[in-house]
Image (cartoon, rainbow, N blue to C red; front, top):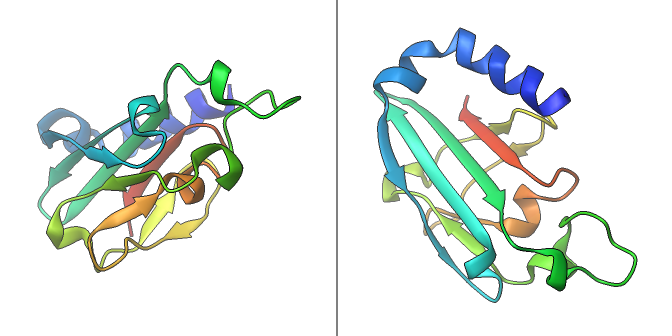
Length: 123
């Protein structure tokens, strides 16, 4: 319910980004790349990134119920566009601040440190 409430609140406050923003699927590389989907919507200087795991049950360590942490995601990265390298992104569900590396990528382990889905917006 928290995920839905936060996402709907963001959609209400950033409606133009959701409606008119340019859609771009994101490239993923690394050990768990087949298990991560991501896309971005961009409108002017505003950017929204959504990332979700897929088909992860067989990859979880013994006793783990949700796909979070570095031991699950290993070296998997989500690549944003080159102009995102200097952006600061806020994780809508956790409040964490993330910065893409010099290649414009984010580690999945950082995206999913404490929450199994990610919705990020530029600050």
